[in-house]
Length: 147
Image 1 (cartoon, rainbow, N blue to C red):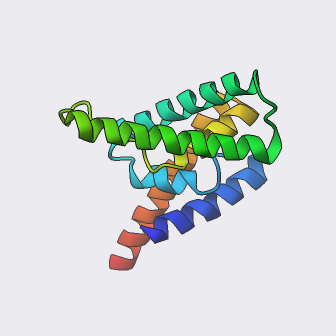
Image 2 (cartoon, helix red, strand yellow):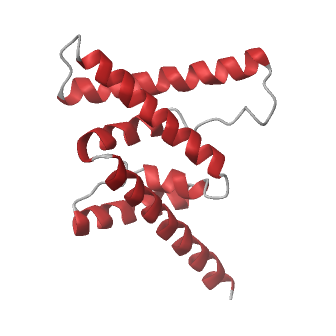
C-alpha cells in the first residue's frame, strides 16, 4: 500500500512539473490507483468531492473564505460529509448495494480543492490518468521483480 502511495506522489509531482495541472493533489492518484478495481468507490469519492465543493461555494457567499481558510474548510467539510455518510450507512444498515463509501475522508476534499482551482475536467482526467500510470508501473515492478 505505502509503495503505491509513494509512487503516486512521485508520479504526481512529475506530472505536475510537465503539465502544470494538479491531478487532485499529490497523494490522491496513489489512493485512486489502489481502488481502480472498485469504480463504485472512485465514483463515490468524486461525487463527495463535488458535493463538498458545492457546500463550500455556498458558504463562501455568506462568509469570507479564501486561501488556507478555504482549504481548511474544504477538508473539514469533506471529513464531516464522509463521516456522516458512514454513520448513516451503519445506522440504517443499508444493503451493500447502497453502502458504497468514498476513498478516505480527506481525499474528496483534496479533489474538491483542485476542482475549484482548475476545473472538473482537468482535475478528474489528470487524476485518473496519473492513477492508471501509477498502477501500471506498480504492476510492472511487481512482475518485473518476480521474473
